[in-house]
Amino acid sequence: MDRRSLITHTGLAGVLAAGVAPAVHAQATLRWRIASSFPRSSDNIFGGAEVFARAVRILSNGKFEISVHGGGELMPAFDVVDGVQNGTVEMCHAVPYYFYDKNPAFALGCTVPFGFNARQMSAWMLHGNGRKLMNEFYAGFNIVSFACGNTGTQMGGWYLREVRNPADFKGLKIRVGSGLVAEVMARLGAVPQSIPGGDIYQALQKGSIDAAEWIGPYDDQKLGFNKVAPYYYYPGWWEGGPEVDLYVNRKAYNTLSPEYKFIIEAAASIAHTDMLARYDALNPNALKQLVAAKTKVLPYSQTILDAAFRASMETFAQNDAKSPEWKKIYADMRNFQRDQILWFRFAEVRFDSFMSAQKI
View 1 (tube, rainbow, N blue to C red):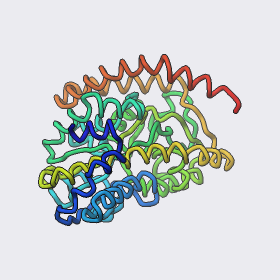
View 2 (view 1 turned 90 degrees about the vertical axis):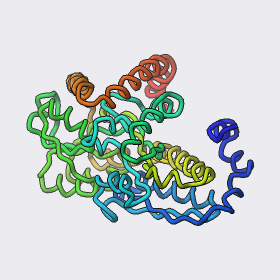
View 3 (view 1 turned 180 degrees about the vertical axis):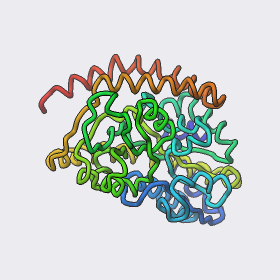
View 4 (view 1 turned 135 degrees about the vertical axis):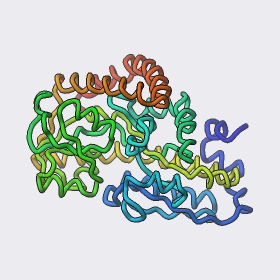
């Protein structure tokens, strides 16, 4: 039985009982570093790397130590992939769409507008072709990837003024995290800005931007966005289920023993599950507190969503012509998504829509 089958059939407890942890006694002690793209103040998404590092330490009986460094501590937040590629650090923890400008296919390892939700993303990565296709692509960047978190569907951002229809995006300066979303926003007439998460508050406060998206109620409240922008829109149609990835330098990874490779995979899985569960636990109370503090929580209009969908499809077609890697992976993603939408329509959507109308 291979290691993936072992996880599937016995779970982590079974893996440990089967002798994985004792096997590391003979391994050499390692000291590695993770460069995060996230500020420490966003403790849950940044904390995914800490959960991962702690699990590695425990599973290796303290022989594999990984130090975690916040965005900007070792290198700029958006440069961490370069750090892994060239071996400056062994690992980074980031959302792949940050590196869209290197090749549009990076975004497919995270999320695209009107893409998967979190469960569908995991299904494609684990039991579709997602991880295989992405790691084939990442090999060109000296990287091996592992899922190491997901936020679930995000909110649609903070605005200094209301946006009621697509025309309201004309000239609007909005912070976005992805070059792909920036291209879609530009098609809507907006002026996208690339700003690290830790700098968003000041940019909104000074009025150098008109709007900004970050993550969701828990993180957004911690960064205080409601104090400077009164309008909070939903849903984040560009982030239905963004996967946060662990990137490992391929050469460093290939020097590891099979036991240490398996520990990385298992620890990343623990962090991946924990992050999404924690967001689902923490976001409701944060949203209630934001509403109590007079935040105006508003849905994007149907006309805005329709216009955004059209702009997204135009951008995807452009990427098909620009990047053969994007075209190959994107086609597989959409084929998988069609069946996911079909299944969710029959069970999840009907159940969720009924329950959302009930008083408990």
